[in-house]
Image (cartoon, rainbow, N blue to C red; front, side, top):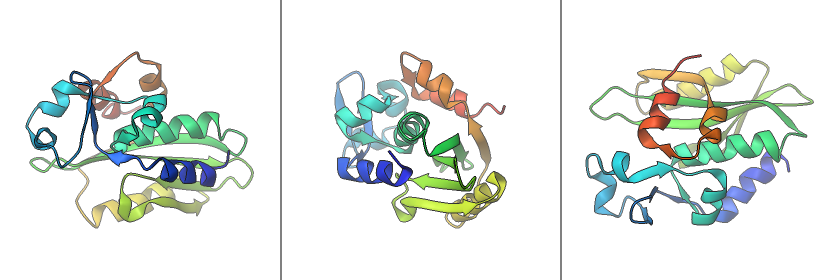
Length: 179
């Protein structure tokens, strides 16, 4: 599978933007009151593993980025190497977060950013020789909407994927650790 085929596959799944409530076993979208209830997501929801994203067809950028990271490292490994999951957040009180993936093509050695959840930029962007330049492009796009408070350009996604369950607080603790 190529990176373009992966993105096409994700689009064909029609993944709904939302959370999976692990307690009540239901999907929570922005149409549900629980979506914006303080503390609800942290206590009830968890990050989905790649097979669960396919099963439930739901996820936020947290879930879909982990999905893309996993698929790029396994199903696309013939074409792709050096996959990185990226995390940014803003200053409270708005506290917006975003995760996405960046990767290097095996033959051309060019770096790309694959975006799914941020609909405005859904697609594959880049084709840059250096990872840091691609991240600067992503950072520029993000800061057009909101300032970045914290960034991690290499989230330990392998640790996340090795866990039995990824709660929202655990996800944030991994994403906010700098290597």
